[in-house]
Length: 192
Image 1: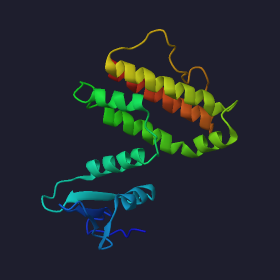
Image 2: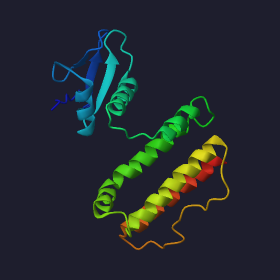
Image 3: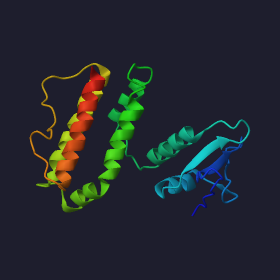
């Protein structure tokens, strides 16, 4: 397990130095590490920053993308080709600045509700309340992508909102619907 170093300013981000020979050096544990080690650190929630040992440039995004690329290449395929095409097509598009915030919000929402999603998957999706939410979420993502790309379809109904299912206090499903409605509202505002 990687050691964290606490800096005087309270930052507990581990600094990883990348050398010209492509080796990665963990300054917290004073050892060389691999991309697999960084992937493990990420799964464990260890915050790290990768910097170029010579220039001091921040290489974290590049290294994380490289970790994803290696995982995809080695058979752990998670990113559908259509998703990758859409992401690539947004580079240079006027909506490019919005996408990081949108993707971050979508992943935050997924992470927040991951235990519920796992439970739903383990019990099977059939007749599970999350099945409808998953369908609505997928439709919302499709609609957002189409809105960003300028080819919005008008034949598809909008995802369910909190108006269709009143929220009961403490009801997780109602809370998720409210969050989805809020996200839809933000998407609608962005599409204007």
